[in-house]
Length: 175
Image 1: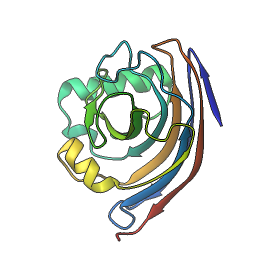
Image 2 (image 1 turned 30 degrees about the vertical axis):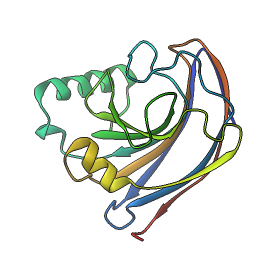
Image 3 (image 1 turned 60 degrees about the vertical axis):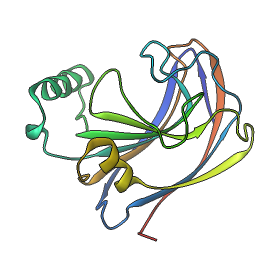
Image 4 (image 1 turned 90 degrees about the vertical axis):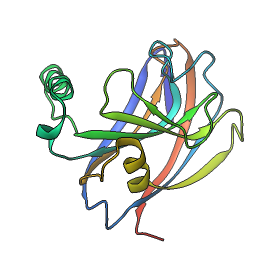
């Protein structure tokens, strides 16, 4: 269970997984309601009741200077190593399932709409995605090692209050 009150709440777990060997991710979540005013195309309203985050390793030296600087600044501010790239599955108010949305803050985060609108609010929904294919579509390259997974319930931009529920997250081989 996660609750956000004009804030963001999350949990992260480190991994070390060969993405090619386990390219699928399956998970469950239950969204109680939409966040009024949330719009992930607008940096000032970029909120979601549920997010599943996948963190990847890669060669940061290949990135454009602007992205390298942004990652270095994030590491200085947080005091923690920042992943090469982050792929986020989320629930979005308006955008159709499968839409890829770039982060307004960095080109190293891409969001994929996994659930949208009012479809089955208040009910458990099961998802399974080929995250390697989604990463390639979002970033235009093969992913490196999967180095972490996280969940996040986020209302800091809209000032809303929301409850959400997360179930098991499982990495699977190719089907």
